[in-house]
Image (cartoon, rainbow, N blue to C red):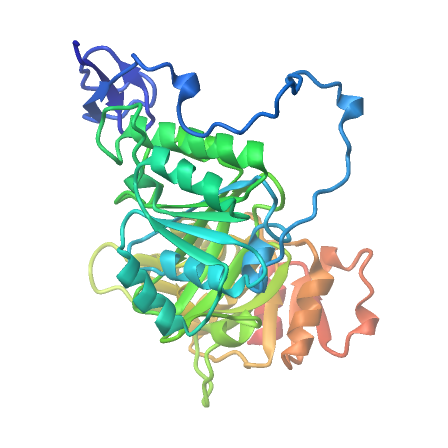
Length: 457
């Protein structure tokens, strides 16, 4: 028998009969790898095969009006952060892909959640660790569960045979890059293997209404390893991120067919597993005794949750010819834009200064309402005058120096009041339709950058 080979792009999964330097699909260079492809066995007999009842009629074509429109009952986990990120719990029959750096805690998070689900049968498939290693990790978590089953196997054929015997209500695969389908001849982790094993698990999840979690590796540039089609096939893509030097981890939604993609869950890594952080504002604002310049507090919103974040700025005289601009946790181009606004509209000479910006707590903020706090932190460091720790800010800054309105202002003000702040600066345009009188915090509406400067300094 002649073995058929093909070339696959490791970036996007494009298939080619011969090797090419540049991928015609995604434009990347040197990404083609030769893989064995065996197509002798009909693929429709491959992977998951549901047991059909004798004489059951085909249910391929259905009229839309015949389908019951009731919302499916979600499976709630004891982890409120995971429930939030998934859009309110685990949806039956959903396929969830979780990516993250090595050693960040992906396996710990899902082993912990599987052990905490006491009343459902869970199958944890591990292709990376032995049963003894997982037992050691479970002992460290100190959670007992009699309905938790473990399978250390990489062949999908064996996995589906075991699934038919056990009939689990939840399946966790750690990791998708280690699985191997016997119907594709290339090595585990290759584009065709990842695509085929995911397709088999997707078929199983949809036909048996069993939720499946796939833990995935990431490449050196931070994207999930394997073809991009992997992210299109699954229902939800979660990114587990954080700095190895900090104890805090963030679970972020990148794609979700059953909820919002703006949600995030925050955890703290401890010796006994991951602890949920229910009030992130307290960890993102550093406790400091004395007043320091260059620090401002921003009232931001991530998904449905309001958070108060500390912005730290340092403005110093530039020693070299070209001033430095460094930002951690904030978009560098956005910082340069704000500096240009201050230079043009406020007359501050930032062009001869080095500027360093940091969002405390190691988190990355995308919300444009942080602009006003960044601007005030820069001015505070420039003038070397501290801003009171009882003041916070919520506003977007426009190119002409105006303070623009931000969404859900009432939630931001309520969160600031709850944490004991005395004043909050917001956009004047946010006053319409907002009842400020019901808050015990002083709300200061501002329209331009110079008004904020006069109000603070």
